[in-house]
Image 1 (cartoon, rainbow over the protein chains, first blue to last red):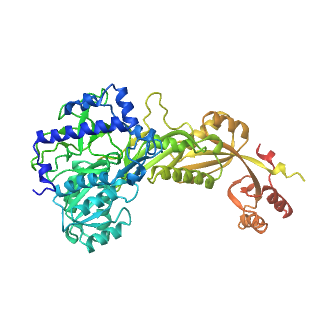
Image 2 (image 1 turned 45 degrees about the vertical axis):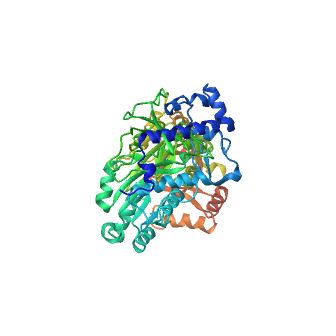
Length: 433
Length: 144
């Protein structure tokens, strides 16, 4: 087994926990002293930095939620000045209002280090050509993977998303050995390659897939591995944590969460109580090394279990299992987070359609397909088909702009969509993963 | 000249493109004892517009509205055609020569000959030209 930093990665658990405690303690002191947001939160919770006397005292600290970032848009809870920042990333929020993440140079280093360890644990390194087919830009996937791959000395092929035929040509011509993208995009690449008469197994050097940013299953892994002749690894992260940060190792038994970077808890989403290792609950992460946007007990909303046993690979850092669901109603469409509330928010600004809607998600071929059904309001009905087509196009256009995902819209008769008295079930997800 | 008497009120109904929608509309009109004199369905991807000339457009409108349908009135004109080869050409040529655009049209052929229903961009102009050409426009009172 090859490790990027064996001293840390194979450090005895007690030493790791001691490191975590030190980092947590200094983080809490720093935030209590310098961040009005965290200071107030801790006061509300009646907890003082002096109350943190051992690692398990993390439970005394208040939780953070996505809404804390949204409510403090764009940078009100940053703990670094703009001059100290070297980058922004932006992700979509639940109401169409995005959340902004800022990074200092040290934050980028921590993120890149995390990925360097992860990519090395997949057997990648100098000599590999890593094709990065995550989107480059405001999304963290492209740039995050890019710097991680460069750090380990691999050669990056920054293809970003789209133009699939060209991606396949370059994969062949430049001998890509690994690809980082969403699992559904890799399936799409496989299908397009077949149409082009390219057999990924025989005609390319591809042997590793680093796949994530959307939920997938072991069944899909087997299918991808058998079909394309590669090993497919899951990667995990969200922009609030920095971006994609953690992968499985070659054992393929959960993501190693580097303890010196992140402290993981699994909690009961209803009560907020910590659960024992092995119990299923909501993933809660404290990033121990973050300067610009510290996240303490951040409740991501993902449901999983944690395994704190030492991995067969020798790494002592705990693993979390593949994400098994969501606490909220977030959808992941082609790697992009979509909240039904964003759809609602966008529709509210379009007088031609009513407030009721239904989202139908299917997998067509290997790509996610999102359909939004909306009711045409009474006043906006025109006898002319063209006018109606324009209404539909307008809705499609608005939704695409606010969700960053292509959406098909279907106009339906007023009153025909289901009404809900309690919690609305506006999403029909027909994808069978 | 009173051209208004040639302006006919068509009802247009928004309909999803799925089984049973036309039946639902027709059933509602039947219940109200409303007779459908002519109708057509225009369809686009996923939805359609049902257009009909009925003997009691107001009642049809209110009934369908009460059932939750999206209904609108649209002004159309009806021209008598010769029920023989070249009949449609005569009418279409009049409008084409006058620069009047036909947005959509449908026709029926009954006991008293063939009738072309037209939705045009310039109603007034179309009525004048058709009358000047000697062709026959049907008055609103023929329908309702």
